Figure 1 (spheres, rainbow, N blue to C red):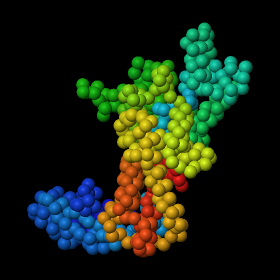
Figure 2: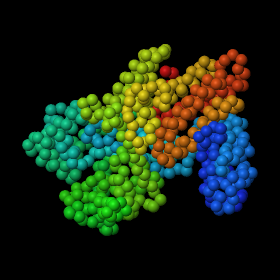
Figure 3: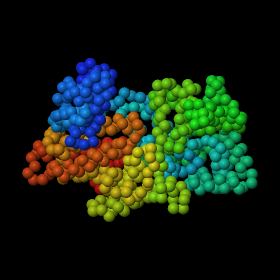
Figure 4: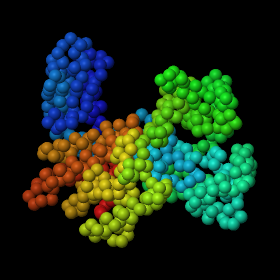
Length: 576
């Protein structure tokens, strides 16, 4: 149930009945319960058009709007705000409908083709913490979009091409005389460092590396075979991380830089033919007056180097027209760190000028901030090195296991291992996802693994508490009676939150902001704890109808937490 959309429709109908057409209908959630759950604040904007006082307009709207079935009370406050207090009987009915619906009452959206470009590791190296945000934010957005019924096309734009691969292939060619590829590439970081040292210091090696680049780009069979072996082993490293992270990317989602290689020359030809790219100092350049500096100098966007080589810009333009043309994407979402914002803005301007996208197709760069260490600087190892993502995740599971073992529990060794995995991985993901993606955040083991506050362990614990409640009651959640009767204020507050799930999901899908869902789930869990304390279910003397009503409301809490966490890629537990 989307209460916001329902209220907007009702207020729109009331305004039309009053003779007001095409007016904005600002309905928002109230911050304070005493002001009701929602508020219409459009009367002020209508004062000039209707030549009436805002409060008089608000009074007229209250008389006209048809909300008797939804609201227990409408009141005009201040200069003309209309506060909407939702009806307990209506809320009870909506909760019942949601509880019996596999989709929890959330309607599907009109289907769109949506490309989401995320993760995008460099296959020359193992995934590190710098890949965490793009991978898990992107996957959460993908899961939400698919849940809403969209056709989502994952695009893992892996770095699998370019001059660095000449160096790596030359080194691999030598290593294969001593050992198999899997052994040689068992540690990609060490392999890369070895190749780089040889490139910088070994006489003749740099020339060999450049020869391999030419061979690779020319389609030499032996060189391509080496490259494919390198890519295969490298992808296996990424797959290990995706599996640990419970991320839905697979090999079929890979659309690496190499996939666009054959179209790069065509991109340049088209840009030149349309007068968009011009030669400047031997390079092919697009000047962008829309992004001119304060002195009026246009931004410079290089699409081909003076030596004929291509750049990220060329590949991204080729990717744009593949996605808009071949994939027919209504929306393209690209998740990279905020430092690339200018690049993608330039890419969109150039691509649209070249006709690589249709006007109605969107190109949405979704930037995110950095993960910082306790010193406020980019997260590194103690020696200043890059933190491998797989090692970070293993440490999270190990730390979670120690914390769970210290708690009072009756878990078997196998159960403890499984709980540690779900809590550890969930804690790392949620600590990231719960922060606004556009800001930096500080990595802290203690806060992310805490069972208090806005953390994954707290939400996972809230879910297990509901499940425990049903075990104690001897009631099967799947077959229990569904007859909810909201009476107490804590029940009302919890029900209102539960009915806002669809609004929150819609916001995440529009803005690619998983932190909104995290905040919502935390609010639901906190409201449940308040409800649990104030509205007993299993105490002696509780009437069966009251008990069943409160258990049903608790069941909806569990299903909402389970679905919400699943959309974030975080697993729930039956006990912990």
